[in-house]
Figure 1 (tube, rainbow, N blue to C red):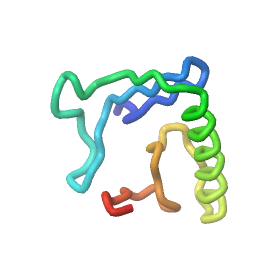
Figure 2 (cartoon, rainbow, N blue to C red):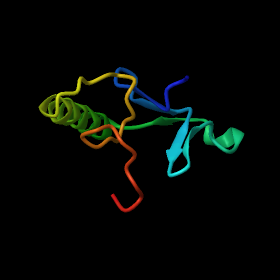
Figure 3 (cartoon, one colour):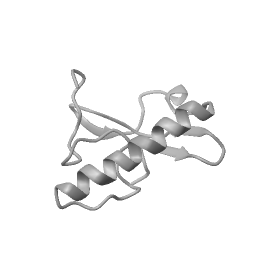
Length: 84
């Protein structure tokens, strides 16, 4: 299975290849949903900090961080609902 979101910290690019919601994980609905987003250094810095936080939370709950995880997770790597 392909990753959902690829974070390229070196080139400041976020690549979207999958989607995840209450229905599950799947390919995006349209060709245009596959995309590469160029972001500035501030966004990359925040994503790096968030990734460190994720590692700490997962380790606290006996789980290991895996680069294959989704970008936005809870402590159990379960789906975050829209209201989250």
